[in-house]
Image (cartoon, rainbow, N blue to C red; front, side, top):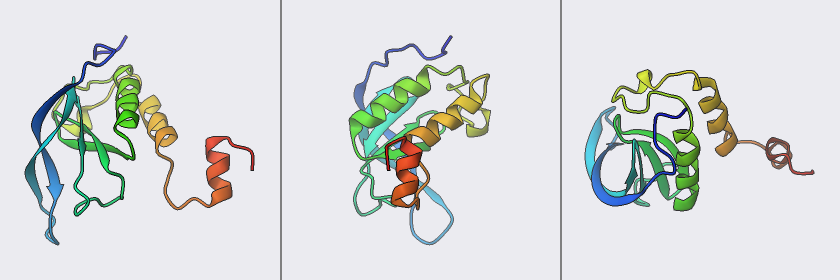
Length: 132
């Protein structure tokens, strides 16, 4: 049984995210406007600071930890629904404490949603299950 009620109900609001700025290994809290549901939030990252080129970011709101960068807000919502269904301690503000019986399933889900970068075209087709 999941600890986060599903389906998630999204609401628009402002919240803080930690961003790496400059060359110093230091995070800065930045206020952004996005949507929030339970322990998840989605916001559009500014093009100037986007490290991956993906415009939408799904974060774990209590810890402000980045989960995924995806091209569409709806993709982030769908991923959050799948994460919410897992039996994990999503309400902790310490990222290392987001653990539970479904921890390995969460890791597998992350790999299915966002495959490793740098795969060749043939490797990407094999990863997604498409015919070469």
